Structures are given as C-alpha cells and as structure tokens.
Amino acid sequence: LPLFTFPDLTMYSASKRLHSSGADKASTYRAVYPASLLSGNPDLSTSATVNVTLPREQMYETNNGVQTVRLPMAALSSTDELYFKSLCSVLKITVTNPTGKAPLELKDIVVKTPGALLSGSGSVTVDGTEQVIQLSSGTDSVILKGINTTIAAGASQTYYVVVPTFSNKEMQFRLVVSEGRYAKKKTNENKTLLRNKLVSVGFTADKIEDDDPTIVVGDYFSVSATEKVRFSRGNLWYDPTNGTYHFEDDQTSLGSADGEQIYVNNHLSYFNWSKS
Image (cartoon, rainbow, N blue to C red; front, side, top):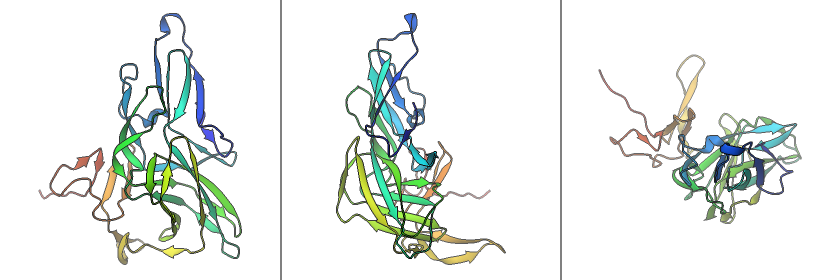
C-alpha cells in the first residue's frame, strides 16, 4: 500500500488486490498495515485479535514537499480484494508564526493527553468491522520527529499526527524549536477523537520559552570542556523494539516500582547499576 499524502486524502480507506490463484487462494484474507504495527510475528490466518505497538515517535516524511503519513489500517475479506479501514484518528496541526517574528525553526511537535494513552502496546481485532486500536500500556504522548522546517513570519504550515481514539480529554502541544526552546499550547476544551476522523488544531507560536521547569531540574552544568547536561524530573524509558529513548514528564510516570522487574511492556523504565 502507498503512503497517504495529505491534504489530498478525503477518505481514510484503501484497497489492495492480492496476486493469488488456484491452490494459493484462501477462504479468508486478513491484513494489518503497516506491518511494523504488529508485535512479534502473529499468524493472521488463525487469530483475529493481534497485538500491536503504536510508536511514541513518528518521523516526519514528505513527498514532493507534502507530508506523507503511515495510517494504521486493517482489512478482512473472503476474496483477494482487500478493503482497508482506518484504526486511528489524525490530528491536523496548523502552526502559525506571527507577523513581525523571527523565522520559526521547527524541529519536533509533542502531543500529550493526560489520562489517555497515545502510544504503547495494545491489540486490535481484525474482523471486518470498524475497529480501533485498544492500548493497554504505554505513554500519554506522541512526538512528530525530524520536522526541521522553517516557517517565515506571517506564514503557516500544517502537520499531521496519527493518534488512537479517546474521549473527552484535554490536549497539550509543545513545539520544539531548538535545544531548550519551545512554544506550548493547551486546548481550551476537552477533545474527543474518533476513528477515521481528521481533527484540526490551530497553534500560534507567539511566545517562545526556555525549558519547562516541570521537565528539567536546575541549570546546565559542564561534564567536559565542550558538553553540558541538565537533570530530567522524569525517568528515562528505552524501547528495545525500535531502539528509541524518551524521558517521562514527571517522576511519578513509572513503568515499575523500585526493585521490581526492569522491563515492563518491553520498556526499560529506570536506570539500574551494580557493584562487582
């Protein structure tokens, strides 16, 4: 299946004909897209419910200057013509750099929804109905990484982020413009994101701030002649399935209690050390 190209997409669905004939034909065809969504190597021919993983980091990609999106979908068919249905919602985030401001060098967009899981591990049932991904563990945030675009003063740019469905939750946004510099926004009212829907959010980057004091502790200090570091309030999580790291926003965001198992839901949730 091709990547979807926004904003040309009008229907979150797609079809794909399989090349099969004679003895190769099956009575049921079941598929999930993209394949990287699947956890492990499940047998879709025997199990309708499969484990999936929604990554916390989504890489920003473009095709001829237009963003492309890997939209999670699933299909079930009794023929070799598969009709895919969306499993998630999509946020359409329009960022505006006000007139009179310096060019905005946008690196990443962080979306956070306290009380709802936006990334992590869960499952989906591929039965041909309008199903959604049900997350059972993970984090309340997702990051659109590697944007690295410049928005001129008085101009706007639109970005798309795939998120699972949720109901009646506040949304928080953070634009990362450089190391230690960001702009943030909260929705004025709770949002509900439904399957197969495009939800628009406007963001005017009229105030660029330094590091959020709720995320970091204290000031920078030198660890070498050229390098400086700061302490985070949150634990470091490592996802061995894709080799990525992220910090939790606060110290209470634990994957496991002190002294218990190191890995929880395939994430290393805190540092460990030993003496020999």
